[in-house]
Length: 214
Image (cartoon, rainbow, N blue to C red; front, side):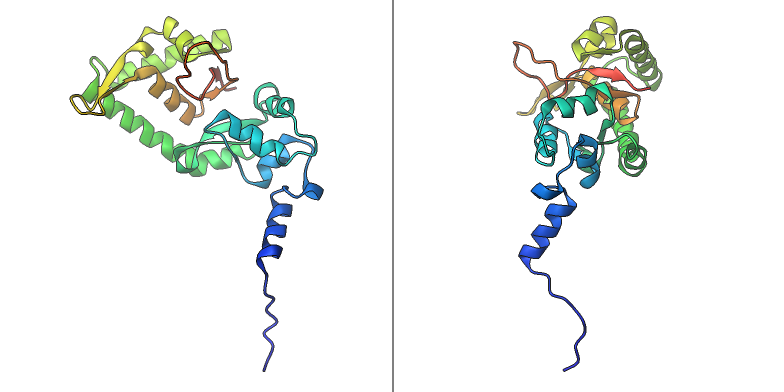
């Protein structure tokens, strides 16, 4: 029998290799959060807790403060709407590649869908009014630095308008223009999600507030 030189890799070896490659093995763990994101391309971020859990599982010294430093102080981790239309936290250096490959195509579809829904389920909206509202939001964020959706709605009343989706159906629901428009601005890379702000009211979403990029 002629040997092909092939090496059989067992499940244990495969798991060990993944543990090293994804810096999960104790000997492979790292010091900075940015290294944890690069090891797995991006940290899932559609729920605030997942970034902390994923990062701390890979840090030599797990620390929520280290995660917050990267997300909110240095902003060296950027949350992007990307793969599977969900949020991932990626390093600032890698963000342009993720944006070009995944986020930008999503942003184009998000804009087309929002304009379609505004035309069907809201009154008085057009492409020109949407652009005007976007500029107003950016002006407020430029002045304030960051704000919640509710705070932005106080200064840009158009954000408080609603769309009645699936009227007359059992799953009829109202969506605020603000929630959709801010998602669009984030997809376009103009704003970013900022620190979670807990309140006494029932949580209406996973995001905190919004800050202007750049």
